[in-house]
Image (cartoon, rainbow, N blue to C red; front, top):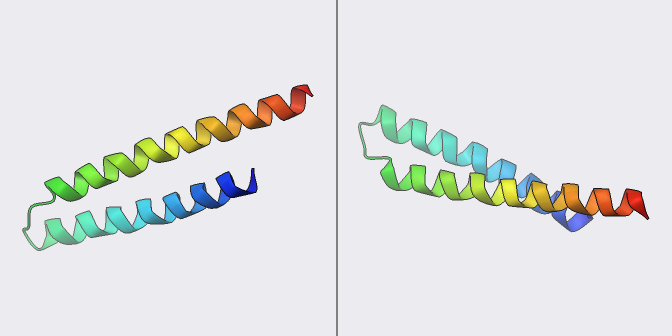
Length: 63
């Protein structure tokens, strides 16, 4: 579970960095399509990790 928590924390950090990157691209009038795709992947991965963590938590509390 600790490993999942670390991965989630890293993902949340990357999420924030990617949002800032997109904002910077937009401010500079640059295309952010690729950066938005990366952001979507980060969101998807975070959702998967959070689901796994919740599932493990449920399994542990039932034991």
